[in-house]
Structure formats: C-alpha cells, structure tokens
Length: 217
Image 1 (cartoon, rainbow, N blue to C red):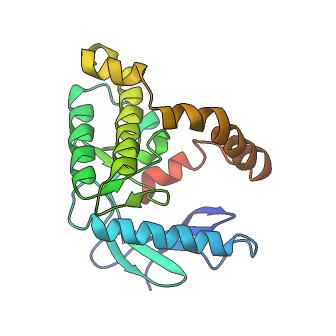
Image 2 (tube, rainbow, N blue to C red):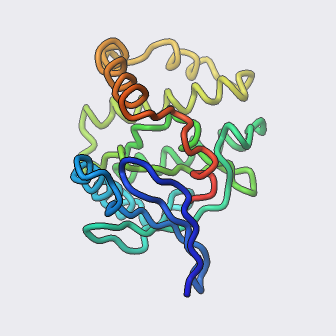
C-alpha cells in the first residue's frame, strides 16, 4: 500500500502527499471540506485542473496526473517556499521571470503570486510556482488578461525588490511605482473584504501552510 501523509487540512478539504512507484504525488481531496464550502472547494479544484492541463509539459509548475469530481492528483516539485529558501541569487528571479513569460504565453495568469508560499526555491536554485486555484486560462488573452498578467509581473517584482532590490531595472521600478487602475480599485474595495473574510472568519493568513506547501509540489 502506498504511504500517505496528511500535509494540510482546512475548510476546503485535505491535501495529502503519497508515495507511488514513480515518485511522490500530491492529492487534493474535497470530500472532507465543510459542507457549506464543498461546492466552492470543487469549483476551485476544477479551475486548477483546467489551468494545469493548459500548462502540461511546462517545467516549473505541477503536472496534473488525474482529476475527478472529488480529487485532484498532481506531480511533486522538490523545493521550499520563497520565504524559507531566501532566494538571494540573481538566477532565481531570472528563472522566475522566464517561467512567468512562458506561463502567460500558454494563456494562464496565476493571480496569487503575491503570496510567498506560492513560489518555490528548487534544489538547483530555480523558481517554481504552485497553488493554481485562483489562476485563469484564456485562449484569447484580451485586455483583462493583459491587466492580470501585468499584476503577476508586478507581484514578482515586489518579491525581487525584497530579496534582490539592487537588480531592479528602471523599467521594473516604473512598473512597481505604477499599479494598474484595476489594482488600485482592488486594494481600496475588494482586499479589505477579502482580508476580513479569510483572516477573521476563516482564520487564514497569507503564509498559512507555508511549510506544507513547500513539501507539496
């Protein structure tokens, strides 16, 4: 029987790391989600499944293995969360920017790169991205997609400013200094509500489960 280890249990279900003959995998199970959030847990899981299928074969993101109504099993990427790995090497952000460009070319925006646990530092020093529940796939890549892609870039640059500020170019500094009108509106209206719901009502924090996520994918 395959070995299994519970990595995370929350309102949206459970996340397990399991051993297989070909290596470890990560399984998200929504059957243990709270009954009043089970529909949302499954909606987010289906969203993640669609995005990972669109990114199939792209190195640096989890590879989908199987999904059904209740579960999503995806590949394992060995690494630690950004705030644990403390990426001070220039190569890390070069690889992260390259990965983000490739992801956008596949028609995917991550939408959650502001959270450090969603960026991994791999064993070879390169970047990987995880947690695609809020990501969005668009074949057309229209105006809204481009706005969201720019926000992905800006969030990555915020991390670069934290760890390698001396490497920021003038163009990157201009992007950081000029958030989109959409971002300004979000910060003024949506984010306070989001923080109230997630932190006060659901008991989350942006770094919750960081250690688990570092082992997950």
